[in-house]
Amino acid sequence: MDWQTAVQGTVTGLGYELVDAQRSAGGLLRVFIDKGFAAAAAGSAGLQATAEDRFITVEDCERVTRQLQHVLEVEGCDYQRLEVSSPGLDRPLKKPADFERFAGEQIELTLKLALQGRKKYRGELRAQAAGWRVVLGEGESQQALDFVLEDVREARLVPVLDFKGRRFATPVQEHSAAPGKQQPAAPGTQQSAVSGTQQSAVSGTQQSAVSGTQQSAVSGTQQSAVPAGGVRRVKGVQGERRQ
Figure 1: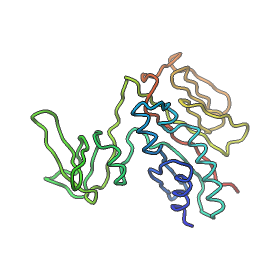
Figure 2: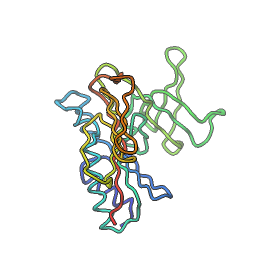
Figure 3: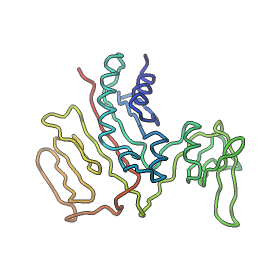
Figure 4: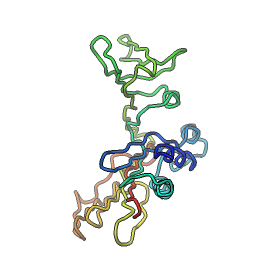
């Protein structure tokens, strides 16, 4: 079994959506996961879904990381480091299902070939009978660009900060092979295994410890500008291949 098949089967088998998987020359395997469309739709409709039901949390990344480490070792897939993350605010749209799910959202579109000397467009994604449309501008100045997926080099959501109930969690990193006792990270907490015990918390006192136990407070009690509730960004649960 190749690594792509192993990653796809593991992620979907755990009930998540595989957004993307990338493998670098240095042996880093990056996997981007999201909650399935049904869970996200239920949360958006307010059907008794919590933020953890709608968005990827640190616990989701840890769960997928542990299972992938086991599966990749059993299948003999070569890698040096594994990183499992949420897709972030600028989530890529790759599959037809992605375009269907995010119809009505603002996207940034890059075409393979320039149209009237331009490749990049930004506007609202709409479904067409045959293909897709990006509506550019507002009011009387609106223009439309029709396209099919074969024309697309890259498409991403436009990051939107919604201060009326959507929440963003700062990137979270954890190194599974770090020495010493490893502590779990709660949603909204950033952890990293750089030189020991680096920790940072948004919406609270920001602390940093590099090379041991050095700590510094940035502006006292720095508070996040984004209130509770909303899209989470959880990035960087990492692990090393077991020897």
